[in-house]
Image (cartoon, rainbow, N blue to C red):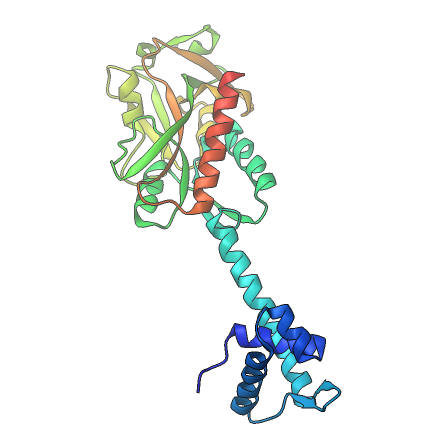
Length: 302
């Protein structure tokens, strides 16, 4: 015997609501005899009558009322499931795993892009995790991460990863307040040749020196590598060394005993980008990327 499906449930509910086979058949746009046959088959399959029929009336049996309660729940959840799937296909619901570097957080970019997106798409869950750029690339390739906000300065991005540049910031040097170079308007990179560097890198495979090599003609002396940008600033302000970072951070990071100075000559910028795997995108991720691109373009115009 053919199993009952949602179509049969809708037939039953239509009759239960109207308590009249003719009107129910009319609402369903099927012939009354066909509807009667389907209800009879359902009763045979269940082994009990769902309706009490007389020549003048139709009424639900006790079993029919219990069946109606469960059938209406099943139809409700089926409709909800269908709606959620359609919403997911349209990029209106879903869950995205997003990583970011500390410098992106302190620049205010992360909040700018994600807060406005959450306002537009409140049913998309955004799970955030701080992660260094190298780990982001690995997680994007493995599929554990959907989108990364990262600095692509001195970063070798594989062809399996797409990036979109959001901002290009000039590099600056963070110095202890009492450092002799802190009195200058700007600092030539060559003046840092014999300075100990405090670097920011969350990767065990990178000590942060490559970024300095792009700017300087000397091999930097790395005194300490930190995985947290606030730890870098704390060590610099205590007088242990200097550090290279995006100039934009000087407007958001206020550490006692610390000064920021422009670097000359300006050979490279520190790019802030989003990164995602070169594969078919989740609809929700595609919506987020398009939102970021539109917002970034609007900011550039202003």
